[in-house]
Image (cartoon, rainbow, N blue to C red; front, side, top):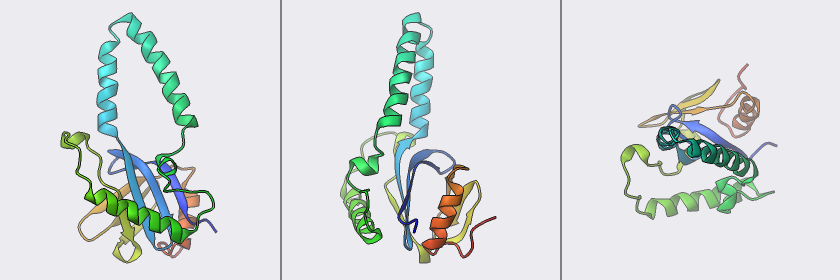
Length: 173
């Protein structure tokens, strides 16, 4: 049994965001954490600082620290207590659904639209049409099309989970 399955750092919406894609029985969840445009803007600002020699040293040290933190930090869904070791599919769905409902009640931070992060998303199997999995997981819902970049290393595992969860009739070749 592969459910529930969590993939971290999954690009969404043509790599505009990165977050956690979670597959449960009959429901897909996506919780975006990172706005790639904002990250790129911050990188551009750092590149402008490179004109100063001390900034180069500081940037190198900051890069090493950031890489170490990313390798040794729990994913945010674990930090928030949404993803627990050994959990059941139903318990996870209950926590994720409660989190999504809570997030709907929160006022969005005042920020430029391009630098915001969408609210967490929930997609039930009956609402998903035209699902396909290759280098991306693509599907349509009533009002939108969704695309998630899937690593080559995660494609087989995701295909198995989607099949088990009732989204795919057969795993892609």
